[in-house]
Length: 219
Image (cartoon, rainbow, N blue to C red):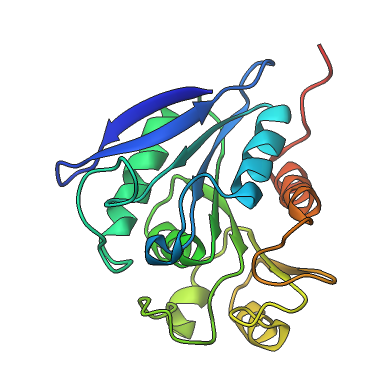
């Protein structure tokens, strides 16, 4: 794991951790954390599990802190300026290798990831975990139906069975608006996926591998 810093287009320096696989790199991934004003950072267990899973499958993975979080410069941008942070993170991790880029976001990070990916052709697939669709977290609105219907790249919608922010009924409505999306619900857990992190990471891994290609053979 290598601690790194990288710049945004508006001149901030963000902190992150880059994990490279022990096998030849076949793609990249950027991981976005939960709401910084509710304790979110790159160090949550679900994000660690996804990072490890992707690296195991041959991906270079960058987890980072949004602006104003821990050691990253700047102040909280309300979810609007954070799209610049993700754009910068995608550029930084793609400097490590060619190949497809998966963007994975949890909660607040899922909201940012979806909105950034709409206009970023570098994103090959999206994994959105606990995307907030109900309850007011003071986030920018989910993109409109007309915007979502134009997004044809693969999307995974994943949530815990008892996720109050991302209930199954709301996810199913969103699923109907995305042309190339699938839904996975982890039984017996909630928004935080406590003690089910590896299971959730495995679902993300299977989704990405199926769409972006098989994992490399053992060394």
